[in-house]
Length: 502
Image (cartoon, rainbow, N blue to C red; front, side):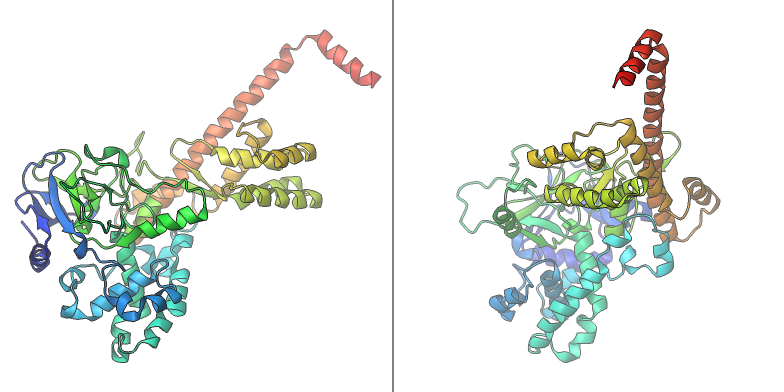
């Protein structure tokens, strides 16, 4: 079972070396809540069964498109089209402009041309996301800067490759945003294949990763038996290592693999790479009729909405619904401004900024992430205690190069409680108002509904974290009060006498 519009694409895929088990894998339109167009199991699929195989030659990237070579590799790099996504976007727009002459013509025609992501929302819809970090992460201004500073000059320099009459059709800013959204929502980060011949039987080398800003992520712990972990780690020890790792990874469009949808906790298939091919392999048994799910690495709704234009709504504890992976971001400057408001001294301001600069130089976070465990982030506690250090303790911390341990005390807890309250106040509505709106307006516009789900999830986390912190503070105060009441009168008298003698 395949959708009619996919038949030419699947024929192209198979005639160019791709293999797919069409007796086991079909494609259909699911409901919007289940991702729309996706893959379905036509029969029971066993764990570790290969669903389809993609030759690396069918992957669309800056390595496989002929544009960089035609443009001239030195000039391509001089214009920094080898950095970020601008080069891949230009390659995809150029391939699109070649129409039937492009190797990927049948693939490009099935890619979406419209997106529900906030990148394309109007100002009224974007206001619904006020208080969340979604809008500031859209990167629309950065993308347009790259378009104007890198892509447009490159296009204008080569009218032989980019005919002037085609510019408004294939190389407009709108097409640039659409192509960038295609990459954001559907690409994979793939380790570049080895150039040496592989002798003997090939083994699976590792997993095609979508964790560094491309589309879906992978969970390395669920790899089939025999798969080596060749994934890129985050603990590079220097800039040279980081550059080597970036060079080893190529953001790529992978035909057929990007047809799979994803949903929190539902992954049952994953893309792995070999030297010459990529393979989509079942990571668990999939029953007939089930959707075949890839994974977004269980992203929070804020990221799902930003990248893919949808949210996950699942049962939570109690009667609420939402995404168990939701998070809230709190900026370090909110902690600093709250502290300075309480201290209200010019000298403190100078010292605090000095401490913040040191914190950042030492690799401290400038954004703290609060999760559904409702714990105040340890780094946030440590920064707060750093601000409260005496001058002598601050000098010791700087000499040792170590910030304070993340230990909560009453002073720190009180300030963090104020920080959480201020973060909650950044939303224009309360959690009670949002819950009422969700209940009273079931037919609200889709964008408004999704924004509501995002901010509700964040407010639940903030409110629960604040309540937990306040409970801890109250318990600590009660403990201290009880200790004072139990203190013997003679002890209190001795203490007073000592103070008098001084």
